[in-house]
Length: 245
View 1 (cartoon, rainbow, N blue to C red):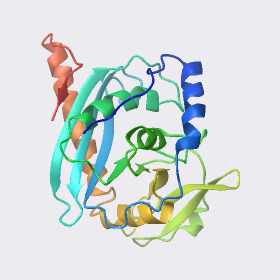
View 2: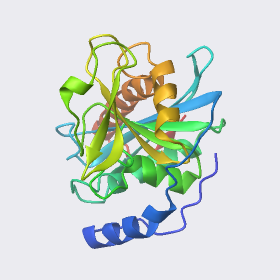
View 3: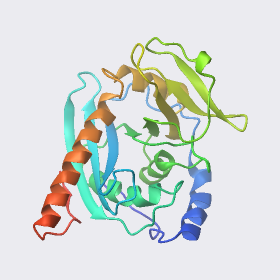
View 4: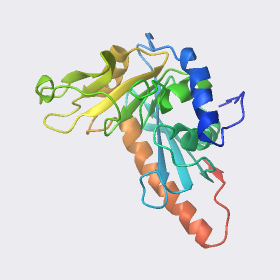
């Protein structure tokens, strides 16, 4: 899969904020997006260190799933040491470069990308899913395990599979809390680029055999496996900036 990056990766906060401001108007949240995607990719990143994003060794995973069978079609990983500092709200600049390398290793071009992260549900309205969507030109959305910005009244969210409540921030709807299985914790869905919220909500639900959609569930596991392999490689004296498929 070919991805051209038409700018240099920022190395500091002010550069990153300026690039977010430049790219934000390019994100299209109206969609409608693919109504019947055949291949949907899940993307996730694992960090060394405390595992919460503070480490510099990063492993990215992309898993492409056939929506008809929920079987994996293709996997790709990439590992590297990030040079962008740990700054809440700017995690995309630690994660996008290595995710791009993993995407470049794919032979199949997905119809939809689902990131473990946020899109519009971001304090600056330009989270990881927005950035990847604008960069790749593909329909993209975020499916996160925890909320980042915005809230909803817990009483507004039913306990049954398919129940949802809008996430609002400053009077603006920025995403949805979605119950993917009866009685389990919700996931947090937000648009990134070229897909609207009702469409991506339906796709996430259709691919959820467990709490997480199969795409991001598989990518979460693969990213942790890739990180473990990278840590072992560094322990053996080999560099971490490798790409695998």
